[in-house]
Length: 321
Image (cartoon, rainbow, N blue to C red; front, side, top):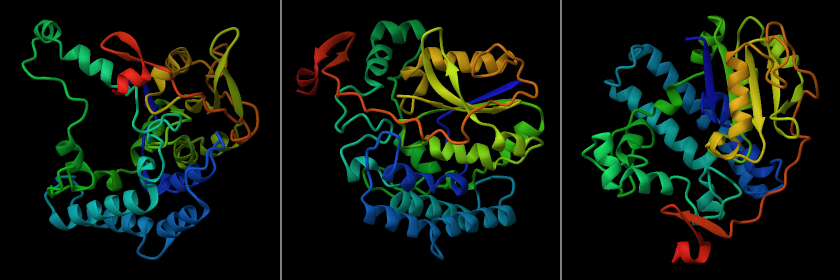
């Protein structure tokens, strides 16, 4: 393995959870999703004794002591980690669609989403001729709530308790640091309209990673990414083999929103070029520009008037009916 790409990845909740109230309260789209009081409450729940961060630390400490092999066979560890995950999600992260009419995965999208990103794929994959060609006997489902519950909060939508493992709270930045310390190139690519694994948390993770060039990376600036001769779809902070890119006007599935920009980023990373232009060697390369990128502001697009359903565009009103 030579290159690791991470797109809107939630890597370490101990590092990134503070980004949820921060993003919801003050993002580059100037869309306030948390009121001042909700922001203060979430920040308090994050940092208070016995709050989110303390619960994550307890989960990890117990895991080191009693389940260092990640067997998920220790009920005490599973319970502590599930509690941490459940508490943080409920009291700090929150679902935007329960507090506002915005999607967790794209704050430009209102709820209910008239054009869910998965609908065309599900429709296509569940056509009989496609299933026959693929040799699959089952329908395709975009997500298994049972599997998700096993690794996270322990209640499925039907309200049945499922003993979870709380893996989201156990996973840490150590895997990312291992990759960097073993000379892998790492490209972290985050769409800036995603809330679920938002770019502020991704940036905090990149800045917190400890490796041989941590300081140089932290001191590098943000440079515009040249997607083509006329368009810049992102801004990037890079030193040598680590890069963090904030991709503009993109939600959780970043490559679906900005395919050319994401393609350029990964190609340049894999072939040892600088991410911003692709014209320089990445070895010892430091991107130049401001230390922060939140000075670049965005404008939310208007709600779509058409939606693709079963391969055909329809008016949103028709698609929702």
